[in-house]
Length: 325
Image (cartoon, rainbow, N blue to C red; front, side):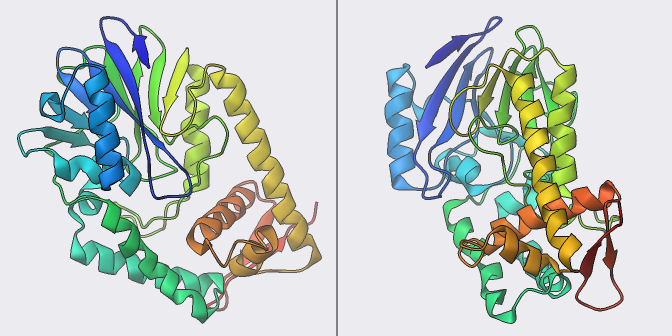
């Protein structure tokens, strides 16, 4: 599929992934520099599909001059290992330890979750879930960024496209916005049929010890799009989005409603994060603990921000309590 923008052509390629989310979308922009936005997972199936679809639009992998990554998740960066070192890889600096698979960072990541699991009241039998990070990294890459990109900056060879920092789904998340056409290449910021998971991650800023609050970040990141004249979103998964503002309002409304469901659990009695997670996801929490815990904490963070609940931190395992109306 091709979209003509102001002086650029954008091609959408759909690649298979080994993850429940299904296919991932990557984009080739034909501007002053042939640019790939995101790379699929490091699997033979994805690489073959990429080469085939690239050939259909008249290119080979050797034609790609630079790659921009919207965030560090394996389904978006794994195939970076297939490109030569001469190809410049560009992204937010927070991608760095993930793309390099820095061993010390991975150790610190595990320690971060071990501490959180105690605070959340997670049953000790679920501690092995922390090691699932290493399993997903099998589909990722070991690559360095050649240059960093931050809010408001432009990328050489992509005239007219600017960067928005959009944390929430990942701390490293960015989106590319072409103001003259209103087109946004959004990564996993906004998806048409599902709401992106606000994934828990440690702080990427050394002088900030408090963990990020990804649901609040995600809400802020999509809310800022309401102030932009966006005509179309090219997402990281699924169909393109044209009624962008309408979908954002819907997403924010549904998230607020879900938070109120969580609050209704707490009206009955104080609960730990893990107990709320079990109530919210009774059939899948034990299969997808990291995802469901992140979602649960996101709703609790939202309710705390709205001052509708409070948290008792007097013990190692925290308990959440509904405030009186």
